[in-house]
Amino acid sequence: MKQVLVFEAHGDDMEFFAGGTIAKFAALGHAVTVVCATDNDKGSFELSAEQLRAVRDRELNDAAAILGITRVIPLGYSDGDLAYDAPPRELRGQFMRIIRELTPDIVITWDPHAPYEGHPDHRAVATAASEAAAFSHFQNFYPEHLAQGLQTHYVSEHWFFAKSPRDQNKFVDIDDFIDVKIGALHAHKAQMVLTVRDMQFGLEASGLSVPWLASLDPHDYHAVIDKQMRAAGSAVSKRSGLSCQYAEGFRRSRYNGIESLAKDQLIPEDV
Figure 1 (tube, helix red, strand yellow):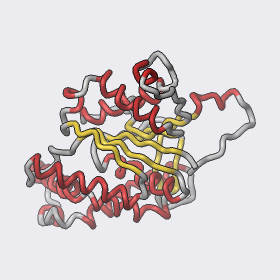
Figure 2 (spheres, helix red, strand yellow; figure 1 turned 90 degrees about the vertical axis):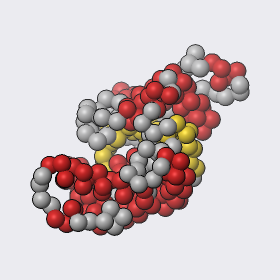
Figure 3 (cartoon, helix red, strand yellow; figure 1 turned 45 degrees about the vertical axis):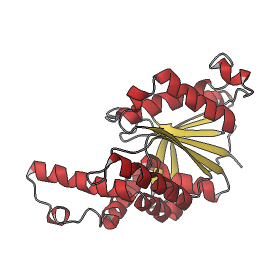
Figure 4 (cartoon, one colour; figure 1 turned 135 degrees about the horizontal axis):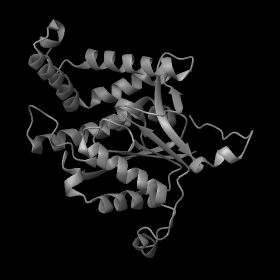
């Protein structure tokens, strides 16, 4: 059994890009922990920040249960303000402490090198998580952790997802888990309502005509999200080379590239 640790900025980040893979990891018996950096208190056109914090906390845990996630760790930073409220060294240190506590084999997070990422929370998590995973086995990074009884830890595999991915070299067949992925996204009710309403804002501003979207009640989001996720999974599958209907793709580094020195030797896949 492997330990898989996911760092995300908001509840639903991981589900959009890696939900099927996470469900597959869990179904194969691997333990999955998710760290959600923010409290998701901005993502609604209907609810106040206070109302949203309580709603999104429940939804975060409901979605995790659907995917088979072992543990959820919420850090509680304000949505949209992570890069301003958590200095980079502080956030990296928090992430590194979690890595040293949980000793994951695999860390999955936003890609710090992918282009066109507009959300500051995503960028902050990408940088802090990738650096924490890269340096958690160096004893001179955050030596206070060791003084408090933690040990250094080497993260074997780093997996990265992105809105505009580059250099993807790992693809996962999620045919058996596409429904689970979509079900987990549906559990993020407030965020899915926001997603549809935001699409409608764009439509209204553009002056274009898409009658079914213009007339859609945002609370009736299930069919829209289902269609979007199946289309996205199908598009990844087509470029993956896998013989499946739906796939998810990642930029992955294993053992810091040491396998390039071991010709004709293969590291077994875990998913």
